[in-house]
Image (cartoon, rainbow, N blue to C red; front, top):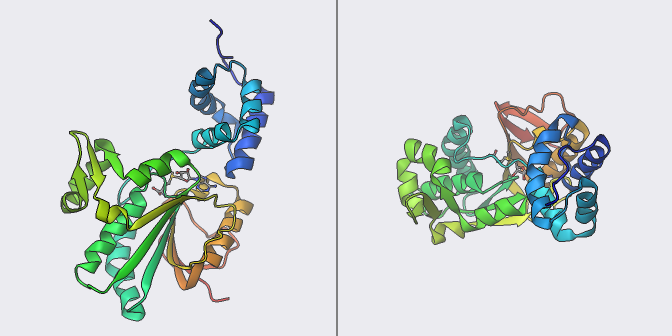
Length: 276
Ligand SMILES: C[S@@+](CC[C@H](N)C(=O)[O-])C[C@H]1O[C@@H](n2cnc3c(N)ncnc32)[C@H](O)[C@@H]1O
């Protein structure tokens, strides 16, 4: 039986890294050789391709394999209510303040790079909780990602115990209220709440063609994968998609301090769109 080449050669690695960059915008370093090999090899086995060079040809000539390669290149770690402080801000400051000055309007929030949807559904749960106090409150959550595998999970809203463990521990009432337990190890967001969140494929390096403007964008734990000029470009796109006075929330290891942007620091991880 033929075996897949053990190591990715320098030449093939260069080509693979350039495809990762051109398809996803992710800047990967050569030290990711092992990681890429581990992610790519199972797909090569399925395709009965044994040379990286042939696999490279295949993804360039087959749109389905190109998308699978994009899915393999992305890192999708996420969980519900990641980074407690921003959720406290969202629940206790952002929502009441927004409501005070926008009664009658629909709050629009974008979870850009939503992965499997844990962030978008965390937003949904707190918006629903807010609605129990303000019945007229309306909102819409949009989640997007470049990886179609995670969007499939997001659309189904089915999560395993490992992802739900922290939610069950820290906010057990929310798990009870918003999920159906569907097996001993899985829960699914209830239909009536799932439909409050819409998911779609979107590459952050491309300007969004959506017509809506957002009050708040969560752009968390994705900028770390981009180089500085690309980070600045993504932030220009975010600025264009935000309403006047819109808010941008970043991930824990992502600061805008060194970047040229039109955002002003407001609180840790929280930025406000500057007046133009
Ligand atoms: C580490 S996850 C972060 C998920 C979530 N925002 C959070 O903080 O928990 C990063 C996500 O960014 C997505 N991603 C990477 N490059 C992207 C791009 N160019 N456009 C859109 N999404 C991208 C990945 O597919 C992955 O799901």
